[in-house]
Length: 326
Image (cartoon, rainbow, N blue to C red; front, top):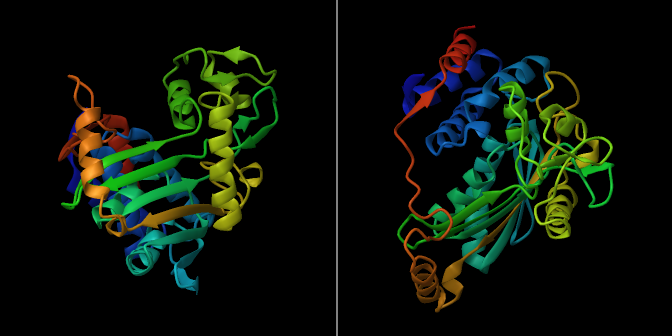
Protein backbone atom coordinates (compact mmCIF):
# COMPACT_ATOMS: atom_id res chain seq x y z
CA UNK A 1 0.00 0.00 0.00
CA UNK A 2 1.12 3.54 -0.77
CA UNK A 3 0.56 6.42 1.65
CA UNK A 4 -0.48 9.37 -0.53
CA UNK A 5 -1.31 12.96 0.42
CA UNK A 6 -4.63 14.34 -0.79
CA UNK A 7 -2.83 17.20 -2.52
CA UNK A 8 -0.83 14.71 -4.56
CA UNK A 9 -3.98 12.76 -5.40
CA UNK A 10 -5.71 15.89 -6.67
CA UNK A 11 -2.70 17.02 -8.70
CA UNK A 12 -2.15 13.58 -10.23
CA UNK A 13 -5.82 13.11 -11.12
CA UNK A 14 -5.98 16.59 -12.64
CA UNK A 15 -2.91 15.85 -14.77
CA UNK A 16 -4.44 12.53 -15.90
CA UNK A 17 -7.71 14.16 -16.91
CA UNK A 18 -6.02 17.04 -18.72
CA UNK A 19 -3.77 14.59 -20.53
CA UNK A 20 -6.86 12.82 -21.84
CA UNK A 21 -8.71 15.91 -23.06
CA UNK A 22 -10.26 17.77 -20.13
CA UNK A 23 -9.70 21.50 -19.79
CA UNK A 24 -8.10 22.93 -16.66
CA UNK A 25 -11.29 23.91 -14.83
CA UNK A 26 -13.15 20.65 -15.44
CA UNK A 27 -10.11 18.57 -14.53
CA UNK A 28 -9.54 20.52 -11.32
CA UNK A 29 -13.17 20.19 -10.21
CA UNK A 30 -13.29 16.44 -10.85
CA UNK A 31 -9.90 15.94 -9.20
CA UNK A 32 -11.10 17.82 -6.12
CA UNK A 33 -14.11 15.50 -5.88
CA UNK A 34 -11.92 12.40 -6.26
CA UNK A 35 -9.60 13.56 -3.48
CA UNK A 36 -12.56 14.40 -1.23
CA UNK A 37 -13.98 10.89 -1.72
CA UNK A 38 -10.65 9.29 -0.84
CA UNK A 39 -10.34 11.53 2.23
CA UNK A 40 -13.43 9.99 3.83
CA UNK A 41 -12.79 6.43 2.69
CA UNK A 42 -15.30 6.46 -0.17
CA UNK A 43 -13.16 4.30 -2.44
CA UNK A 44 -15.96 3.57 -4.90
CA UNK A 45 -16.21 7.27 -5.88
CA UNK A 46 -12.51 8.07 -5.66
CA UNK A 47 -9.49 6.86 -7.59
CA UNK A 48 -11.47 3.78 -8.62
CA UNK A 49 -13.25 5.96 -11.21
CA UNK A 50 -10.26 7.76 -12.74
CA UNK A 51 -9.45 5.19 -15.43
CA UNK A 52 -13.07 5.29 -16.59
CA UNK A 53 -13.02 9.10 -16.73
CA UNK A 54 -9.88 9.07 -18.85
CA UNK A 55 -11.06 6.38 -21.25
CA UNK A 56 -14.39 8.13 -21.76
CA UNK A 57 -12.67 11.45 -22.37
CA UNK A 58 -10.72 9.81 -25.18
CA UNK A 59 -13.81 8.23 -26.76
CA UNK A 60 -15.92 11.36 -26.33
CA UNK A 61 -18.45 9.74 -24.04
CA UNK A 62 -17.80 12.66 -21.69
CA UNK A 63 -16.89 16.13 -22.97
CA UNK A 64 -14.01 17.60 -21.01
CA UNK A 65 -13.77 20.94 -22.79
CA UNK A 66 -17.32 22.32 -22.60
CA UNK A 67 -18.66 25.16 -20.46
CA UNK A 68 -21.98 24.57 -18.75
CA UNK A 69 -24.84 26.97 -19.46
CA UNK A 70 -26.78 28.42 -16.51
CA UNK A 71 -30.33 29.77 -16.84
CA UNK A 72 -33.02 31.01 -14.42
CA UNK A 73 -36.47 30.40 -15.93
CA UNK A 74 -37.99 31.59 -12.63
CA UNK A 75 -36.49 33.60 -9.75
CA UNK A 76 -35.89 30.56 -7.51
CA UNK A 77 -35.32 27.99 -10.25
CA UNK A 78 -31.75 27.47 -11.49
CA UNK A 79 -31.04 25.14 -14.39
CA UNK A 80 -27.63 24.08 -15.68
CA UNK A 81 -27.01 22.35 -18.99
CA UNK A 82 -23.78 20.37 -18.50
CA UNK A 83 -23.60 19.80 -22.27
CA UNK A 84 -22.56 16.16 -21.77
CA UNK A 85 -19.62 17.23 -19.64
CA UNK A 86 -18.68 16.38 -16.06
CA UNK A 87 -21.20 17.02 -13.29
CA UNK A 88 -18.64 18.63 -10.97
CA UNK A 89 -17.85 21.75 -13.04
CA UNK A 90 -21.52 22.07 -14.04
CA UNK A 91 -22.49 22.17 -10.36
CA UNK A 92 -19.79 24.75 -9.68
CA UNK A 93 -21.26 27.01 -12.36
CA UNK A 94 -24.73 26.83 -10.82
CA UNK A 95 -23.98 26.74 -7.10
CA UNK A 96 -23.50 30.45 -6.40
CA UNK A 97 -26.59 31.35 -8.42
CA UNK A 98 -28.68 28.80 -6.50
CA UNK A 99 -27.34 29.94 -3.12
CA UNK A 100 -28.19 33.55 -3.91
CA UNK A 101 -31.69 32.55 -5.06
CA UNK A 102 -32.32 30.54 -1.89
CA UNK A 103 -31.13 33.37 0.35
CA UNK A 104 -33.42 35.78 -1.46
CA UNK A 105 -36.51 33.56 -1.62
CA UNK A 106 -35.96 31.14 1.27
CA UNK A 107 -35.77 28.12 -1.01
CA UNK A 108 -34.51 27.38 -4.52
CA UNK A 109 -33.91 24.44 -6.81
CA UNK A 110 -30.79 23.63 -8.79
CA UNK A 111 -31.16 21.19 -11.69
CA UNK A 112 -28.11 19.83 -13.51
CA UNK A 113 -29.03 18.22 -16.83
CA UNK A 114 -27.13 16.31 -19.53
CA UNK A 115 -24.28 15.45 -17.17
CA UNK A 116 -21.82 12.65 -16.59
CA UNK A 117 -22.24 10.63 -13.40
CA UNK A 118 -21.69 12.75 -10.29
CA UNK A 119 -20.42 9.72 -8.29
CA UNK A 120 -20.67 10.93 -4.64
CA UNK A 121 -23.88 12.96 -4.37
CA UNK A 122 -23.13 14.06 -0.80
CA UNK A 123 -20.05 15.88 -2.06
CA UNK A 124 -22.40 18.41 -3.62
CA UNK A 125 -24.96 18.76 -0.84
CA UNK A 126 -22.06 19.22 1.58
CA UNK A 127 -20.95 22.29 -0.36
CA UNK A 128 -24.46 23.72 0.03
CA UNK A 129 -24.38 23.09 3.79
CA UNK A 130 -20.91 24.58 4.23
CA UNK A 131 -22.34 27.74 2.67
CA UNK A 132 -24.93 27.80 5.50
CA UNK A 133 -27.92 26.31 3.72
CA UNK A 134 -29.67 22.93 3.79
CA UNK A 135 -29.00 20.80 0.71
CA UNK A 136 -31.07 17.86 -0.51
CA UNK A 137 -29.89 16.03 -3.63
CA UNK A 138 -31.17 13.33 -5.95
CA UNK A 139 -29.71 11.55 -8.96
CA UNK A 140 -30.24 8.44 -11.05
CA UNK A 141 -27.99 5.94 -12.80
CA UNK A 142 -27.94 3.01 -15.20
CA UNK A 143 -30.69 0.44 -14.54
CA UNK A 144 -30.00 -2.23 -11.92
CA UNK A 145 -33.17 -2.26 -9.77
CA UNK A 146 -36.44 -4.05 -10.48
CA UNK A 147 -39.73 -3.38 -8.76
CA UNK A 148 -40.32 -5.62 -5.72
CA UNK A 149 -41.65 -8.88 -7.11
CA UNK A 150 -40.37 -8.11 -10.61
CA UNK A 151 -37.29 -8.92 -12.67
CA UNK A 152 -37.14 -6.08 -15.25
CA UNK A 153 -34.52 -3.50 -14.29
CA UNK A 154 -36.22 -0.11 -14.27
CA UNK A 155 -34.20 2.36 -12.18
CA UNK A 156 -30.66 2.79 -10.90
CA UNK A 157 -29.37 2.79 -7.35
CA UNK A 158 -30.66 6.39 -7.34
CA UNK A 159 -28.93 7.97 -4.33
CA UNK A 160 -30.39 10.64 -2.06
CA UNK A 161 -28.16 12.99 -0.06
CA UNK A 162 -29.03 15.41 2.74
CA UNK A 163 -26.66 17.91 4.37
CA UNK A 164 -27.44 20.30 7.22
CA UNK A 165 -25.23 23.24 8.27
CA UNK A 166 -24.12 23.70 11.87
CA UNK A 167 -24.16 27.49 11.62
CA UNK A 168 -20.38 27.72 11.90
CA UNK A 169 -19.32 26.66 8.43
CA UNK A 170 -19.45 22.96 9.24
CA UNK A 171 -21.84 20.06 8.95
CA UNK A 172 -24.38 19.18 11.66
CA UNK A 173 -25.71 16.15 9.84
CA UNK A 174 -25.19 14.44 6.51
CA UNK A 175 -26.15 11.23 4.81
CA UNK A 176 -25.53 10.07 1.26
CA UNK A 177 -27.03 6.72 0.47
CA UNK A 178 -28.31 4.67 -2.41
CA UNK A 179 -31.93 3.60 -2.34
CA UNK A 180 -30.75 0.00 -2.71
CA UNK A 181 -29.41 -2.15 0.11
CA UNK A 182 -25.87 -1.40 -1.14
CA UNK A 183 -24.33 0.68 -3.90
CA UNK A 184 -23.59 -1.08 -7.19
CA UNK A 185 -19.90 -0.31 -6.74
CA UNK A 186 -19.69 -2.67 -3.77
CA UNK A 187 -20.92 -5.47 -6.00
CA UNK A 188 -18.37 -4.71 -8.72
CA UNK A 189 -15.58 -4.44 -6.16
CA UNK A 190 -16.55 -7.81 -4.68
CA UNK A 191 -16.46 -9.32 -8.17
CA UNK A 192 -13.01 -7.87 -8.85
CA UNK A 193 -11.75 -9.24 -5.54
CA UNK A 194 -13.22 -12.69 -6.20
CA UNK A 195 -15.45 -12.42 -3.13
CA UNK A 196 -19.07 -13.38 -2.53
CA UNK A 197 -21.70 -10.88 -1.39
CA UNK A 198 -24.10 -11.23 1.55
CA UNK A 199 -27.51 -12.71 0.89
CA UNK A 200 -30.14 -10.00 0.68
CA UNK A 201 -28.12 -7.59 -1.46
CA UNK A 202 -29.20 -8.80 -4.87
CA UNK A 203 -31.24 -11.17 -7.03
CA UNK A 204 -30.09 -13.13 -10.07
CA UNK A 205 -31.68 -12.87 -13.52
CA UNK A 206 -34.42 -15.30 -12.43
CA UNK A 207 -35.34 -13.11 -9.45
CA UNK A 208 -33.79 -15.44 -6.88
CA UNK A 209 -31.48 -14.29 -4.03
CA UNK A 210 -27.80 -14.68 -4.87
CA UNK A 211 -24.41 -14.33 -3.20
CA UNK A 212 -22.57 -14.34 -6.54
CA UNK A 213 -21.60 -10.77 -7.59
CA UNK A 214 -21.57 -11.70 -11.28
CA UNK A 215 -25.09 -13.11 -11.02
CA UNK A 216 -26.12 -9.96 -9.15
CA UNK A 217 -24.80 -7.72 -11.92
CA UNK A 218 -26.74 -9.77 -14.45
CA UNK A 219 -29.82 -9.61 -12.23
CA UNK A 220 -30.91 -6.75 -9.99
CA UNK A 221 -30.13 -5.09 -6.67
CA UNK A 222 -32.65 -5.09 -3.84
CA UNK A 223 -34.31 -1.83 -2.79
CA UNK A 224 -33.57 -0.98 0.83
CA UNK A 225 -36.63 -1.79 2.90
CA UNK A 226 -38.45 -3.33 -0.04
CA UNK A 227 -41.34 -1.17 -1.21
CA UNK A 228 -40.14 1.76 0.92
CA UNK A 229 -36.77 1.96 -0.81
CA UNK A 230 -38.42 1.39 -4.18
CA UNK A 231 -40.61 4.44 -3.55
CA UNK A 232 -37.61 6.60 -2.65
CA UNK A 233 -35.78 5.34 -5.74
CA UNK A 234 -38.72 6.33 -7.92
CA UNK A 235 -38.84 9.75 -6.26
CA UNK A 236 -35.17 10.31 -7.13
CA UNK A 237 -35.84 9.08 -10.67
CA UNK A 238 -38.72 11.50 -11.23
CA UNK A 239 -36.72 14.48 -9.96
CA UNK A 240 -33.41 13.63 -11.67
CA UNK A 241 -34.93 12.68 -15.01
CA UNK A 242 -38.19 14.61 -15.01
CA UNK A 243 -37.07 17.88 -13.42
CA UNK A 244 -33.37 17.96 -14.29
CA UNK A 245 -33.83 16.65 -17.82
CA UNK A 246 -31.59 13.59 -17.66
CA UNK A 247 -32.45 10.26 -19.21
CA UNK A 248 -34.60 7.73 -17.42
CA UNK A 249 -32.37 5.11 -15.83
CA UNK A 250 -33.74 2.45 -18.15
CA UNK A 251 -32.20 4.31 -21.11
CA UNK A 252 -28.76 4.95 -19.55
CA UNK A 253 -25.91 2.78 -20.86
CA UNK A 254 -23.49 1.17 -18.34
CA UNK A 255 -21.66 4.03 -16.64
CA UNK A 256 -18.12 2.66 -16.90
CA UNK A 257 -18.32 1.34 -20.46
CA UNK A 258 -15.56 3.13 -22.40
CA UNK A 259 -17.68 3.76 -25.48
CA UNK A 260 -21.31 4.58 -26.15
CA UNK A 261 -23.71 7.47 -25.78
CA UNK A 262 -23.03 10.11 -23.11
CA UNK A 263 -24.42 9.32 -19.67
CA UNK A 264 -26.93 12.20 -20.01
CA UNK A 265 -27.85 12.02 -16.33
CA UNK A 266 -29.56 14.58 -14.14
CA UNK A 267 -28.95 15.78 -10.61
CA UNK A 268 -31.61 17.73 -8.73
CA UNK A 269 -30.99 19.78 -5.60
CA UNK A 270 -33.30 21.59 -3.21
CA UNK A 271 -31.56 24.45 -1.43
CA UNK A 272 -33.18 25.79 1.76
CA UNK A 273 -32.20 28.80 3.86
CA UNK A 274 -32.71 27.75 7.50
CA UNK A 275 -32.68 31.38 8.66
CA UNK A 276 -36.34 31.68 7.59
CA UNK A 277 -37.13 29.80 10.82
CA UNK A 278 -36.26 31.45 14.13
CA UNK A 279 -36.42 28.01 15.80
CA UNK A 280 -34.09 26.13 13.47
CA UNK A 281 -30.81 26.42 15.39
CA UNK A 282 -32.37 25.59 18.75
CA UNK A 283 -34.32 22.62 17.42
CA UNK A 284 -31.26 21.27 15.60
CA UNK A 285 -29.14 21.56 18.75
CA UNK A 286 -31.76 19.80 20.86
CA UNK A 287 -32.09 17.01 18.29
CA UNK A 288 -28.33 16.53 18.09
CA UNK A 289 -28.09 16.26 21.87
CA UNK A 290 -30.90 13.70 21.99
CA UNK A 291 -29.40 11.65 19.16
CA UNK A 292 -26.00 11.49 20.85
CA UNK A 293 -27.21 10.93 24.42
CA UNK A 294 -26.16 7.27 24.42
CA UNK A 295 -22.52 6.25 24.22
CA UNK A 296 -21.55 5.55 20.61
CA UNK A 297 -24.69 7.17 19.18
CA UNK A 298 -24.57 10.23 16.92
CA UNK A 299 -26.23 12.11 14.09
CA UNK A 300 -25.22 10.84 10.62
CA UNK A 301 -22.03 12.53 9.52
CA UNK A 302 -21.08 13.83 12.98
CA UNK A 303 -17.48 13.32 13.88
CA UNK A 304 -16.35 12.51 10.36
CA UNK A 305 -12.96 14.07 9.74
CA UNK A 306 -11.27 13.98 6.33
CA UNK A 307 -7.83 12.40 6.33
CA UNK A 308 -4.86 14.35 5.01
CA UNK A 309 -3.16 11.25 3.64
CA UNK A 310 -4.75 7.98 2.60
CA UNK A 311 -3.62 4.46 1.82
CA UNK A 312 -3.96 3.48 -1.83
CA UNK A 313 -3.20 0.06 -3.25
CA UNK A 314 0.09 0.00 -5.15
CA UNK A 315 -1.57 -1.27 -8.32
CA UNK A 316 -4.25 1.44 -8.32
CA UNK A 317 -1.83 4.26 -7.58
CA UNK A 318 0.58 3.05 -10.26
CA UNK A 319 -2.28 2.95 -12.77
CA UNK A 320 -3.40 6.50 -11.94
CA UNK A 321 0.16 7.82 -12.16
CA UNK A 322 0.57 6.10 -15.52
CA UNK A 323 -2.59 7.84 -16.75
CA UNK A 324 -1.13 11.17 -15.62
CA UNK A 325 2.08 10.49 -17.54
CA UNK A 326 0.40 9.21 -20.72
